[in-house]
Image 1 (spheres, rainbow, N blue to C red):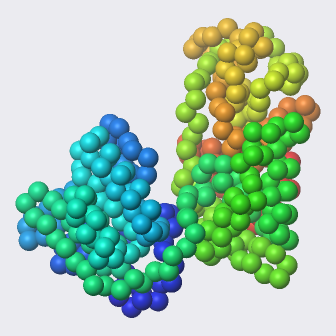
Image 2 (cartoon, one colour):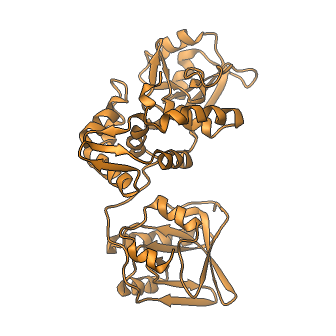
Image 3 (cartoon, rainbow, N blue to C red):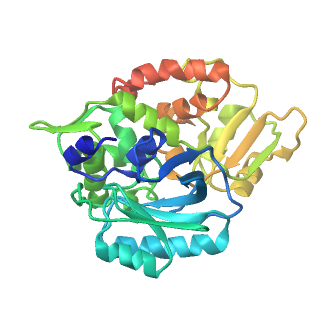
Length: 371
């Protein structure tokens, strides 16, 4: 990024933008050269520390590797938190940590130096403390205005609000968006309600607006960049990692679901298992279901565990994301078309081709029309 481009940039990069710009060489610290290295995963992570990517600092033939901690704010409290994370990180695994914020004042640089923590900003200032060399650069003006806390709105409970814009492209107000999101939970399900507060709705939409994915208009809010929204949801999706159980059951699908419907825990057919329901793939030989209580579901369905020709697989999952916007038909609860699309998009070639069919509809913000 050039000095002129930085001068016209009026807001800090969100965490997502930072990752994207970093990969394109958008961070510099002359006279040193910064290089993004291939993904590495240390044996133990620290919250807030990017353990998958490593920055290498090169200067006069010397080099040092750092894992980085990015914060989209430069407040004293934010910097103190980042320094504490860096110090915990350094005690836990290999490469030294590097704090990155939009702006480091002279006071902030002195604090980093006193705490023996390296740090850079997006304005050209910083201090690098490495074995064999140390670099310090200051005096560059703050090119970024402070903004409210920015976070990843493409994963976790806040992403449920983000997903709503692919289900319906326009909302009259924040309350309209929140109401729509809450209605995507089935009656009696309260786990997601407490997470989707008015404050959360406001913050999520601020971020989406700041990243030019939605626009505020006289009529309310409207999705204006579905392509970026689709790509970011896809990029940040992670497959459920809960315990699994394969086995055989004598019940047919309808009988099994009648039993599950009486249980106090949630259950829904997986996204890949729901592909046949949305007519993008043929049905599966093995019935795959997300459940909140693995053992309870096993007993309910009288499943005999076996890896030999199983006809059912249970996956324990408590996250709201897999149950959000589930669709009911013939008393069976199918995964949302969004969840189905995300799972297919992270599977084999045949599944990815099927995902493209759903993706075409979702890019239009018409996911609610799918049955």
